Amino acid sequence: MPVDAEAVCALFGLPERGATLVPHAYSSNRTWQLTAGGDRFLVKQVPEARPVASAAAMAFEREAGLAGVAVPRQVAPVRPAVGCAARLPDGTLVRVSEWVDGRPVGPGDDLADWLGAALARLHALRPLAAAEPVVYGIHPLERWATWQAEGERQGRPWAAVLGRRLPDLAGATGWVAGAFARAGDYVFTHRDLERWNVLVTAAGPVVVDWDAAGPDSAGLVAAHAAYAFGGGHGARTDRAAAAYLAHGGRLPPPPDRFARRAGLMLSRLAERLLRTLGLADPGPFAIEELDRTATDRLRDLPIFVADLREPK
Image 1 (cartoon, rainbow, N blue to C red):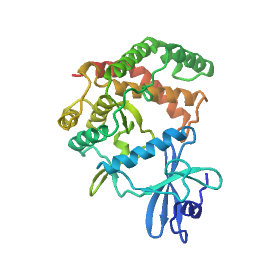
Image 2: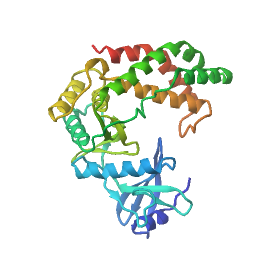
Image 3: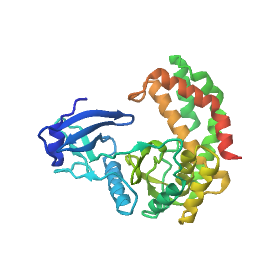
Image 4: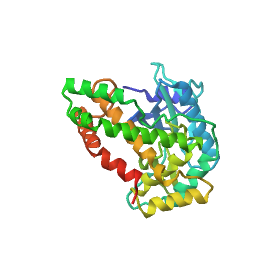
């Protein structure tokens, strides 16, 4: 999808002369690196499907920055369309933020103390009376069975494994849904705080990619983030959890603590199935790779869930 550098600059009040725009990355949404007036910026396509939710996520990103969580500076458009996003002449919705000079989180990075403190600060901003488990992959068993039948019809390599795993999916879904209902500590939060959404800079970690921000359980989010950044059960995960508690956060009881990890796996598994069945846009991912990883996730599902429910 071609995007014109000068058109982006005109929308966001940036110098147009000599501006350049090159593709940067494409996972869930397309991004570009914009160079204008000697400075660099990140241009990102904004999904059209949920304009109210997108605007709320952008507003929360600004709020988090004002509260002391390091985030990229948003560039305000001349004529906003949705939040801090503007619409190009061809109708494409984009937003612009400062370029962050940082590197991905590596295996040697121990961010446990920062993570616990940052999440506690973030979760103090907007407590909520209620929330829905949007990113937890909670689907009725009949839906998984329908996908399994369609997978058999199409000859998808994961279909037979899915058929054998239907009871396991039912059990995992019941646990995840119950853990979310029991949590009760609902807040507005980032909702996608993974290692790939943090950049390590000279000034410290910066949290990026706030598109999915919305309501969730504070404790389930914090426990999942501690596990993700800690690399599984172990000292780093425990220290991140302890830092979160020390800064005023609460965690679910041990039997429910890592239910969100299982929920995200269910959610991403469902996305893979839909993409391979032709029921969702595969984006930049090869169908063969989606087939393979879906098969792997289904095969390992019982062990994966058991390890989360009964941590050593």
